[in-house]
Image (cartoon, rainbow, N blue to C red):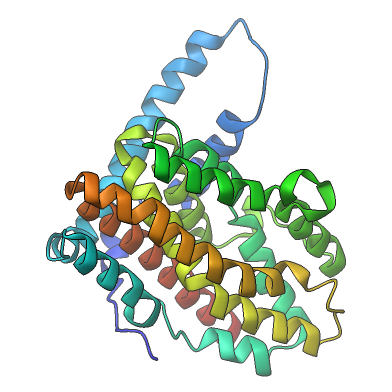
Length: 298
């Protein structure tokens, strides 16, 4: 089903939806989340972090402003919200984008390499996002995020971890997923997901956004896997995408039943926050697809 049209013309007037801001925020995120050691200049770094967190907050509030009216109209009763949420798979921003059938059927190896390079550079790390989001959540949502995290971690085996699968595909395709080679829209998506997961005032937004990924990723992943195998990759080499095409279907069902449903039953206000998070995630994704098509199709 084709996605509904979305007007991104306001980007040109934004302080935050710009190449320079998103690159700066991406570099800051990578530096602040990297394990480190105490240093003598911690006060200077702290002052910089406060400034960046204020800018990050402005960025997220701008993204919220784009979706707040739509989210306010979403039902906050459990059954109504679940019905609305699951419908995003068909009618949410970016769904049915023509980029993915083209990747499956027509893109050559270099075009698929470029697409994957953008996706890999903009990957915020689903396992880490889940881990940061689950802090202090109620029991049932927390347990569901724990189960999801355990799947991401390959049930404790390195060969089953999803992150190294992604790294293996980077090596197979010989790409360099670095910030400097990445369109700002892809960085924006990763920055938005990181911001929601690391700030507790957006914790329920993050639950909605992560749930939206699980809901909508399988169809796109299957099409990318088709394209990769068409240009010569083995099923093992394309496993990262084929796995998510299947596993995320179950993840989505479990997430909706065990994380979203009990959260809304306990506090209907969480439905609005999760709706905003899901719409933010999908709109950021739609921006990516539009930017990818502009680059790949000319």
